[in-house]
Image (cartoon, rainbow, N blue to C red; front, side, top):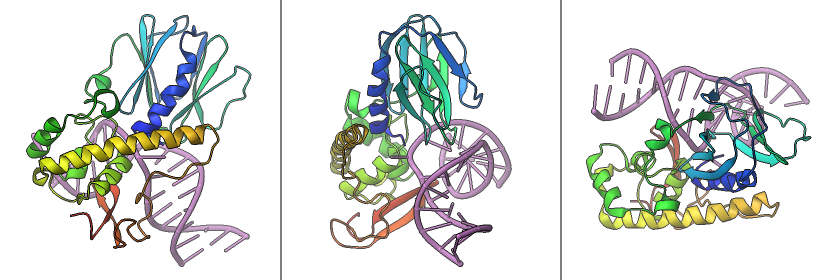
Length: 253
DNA sequence: AACGGAACCTGAAAGC
DNA sequence: TGCTTTCAGGTTCCGT
């Protein structure tokens, strides 16, 4: 499920908890849950996000949630039966938030202060914008492929496999290239593509959540067997940094 | 330090 | 049809 756009849509769902006082928390899965402080009785003040992390600021405590690959939050009512793969439940006065996560790669942490994973995140493209000069500087220093560097959460928080694939396609940059070889002009094209894809993907996910039909904003992800939608050339599927990667062999240079 | 690969989990889809 | 394999939008650990 989750890269920046999906997590942002989940954040908007969790806004329904804002102002509520936590009456009860249920969390059985030790692989996901790390409860360092109690949260019952505290009020939800803010529902934030940075990259792929969600952050609920309470009175005197903070709740962090990372959705892993398959995590999701749904806000429903107290009497709703447990959902399939429900791992965590938080009840406030009139609502009940349920965290589902089939693969259990997600994380849920209650803490007094910001946790390391949160503090180590780089700027969020949606909240902070993209500092192209900074991105270029980091690209020049690293020894990995441009796609791997783009997915580094300390460079830009929230860029995952699909966003990287789609942004590089849009910018016509071959994902296998060394990050050092990327030019200022290309960083500009990548940044521009990221902003556009993030915006379109959030809009798409919101339509889906609202039960409306919406065409996928992804042009090549998951379509390695189709011809390139831009030049008609051949798309190819490879592995980079352990992640499946789709690109066009003729128009991504 | 850096890199590839495996591990953590489970379900859905594709392959045979 | 049904069994087997592959793949999945993330992160972390481990050995070289």
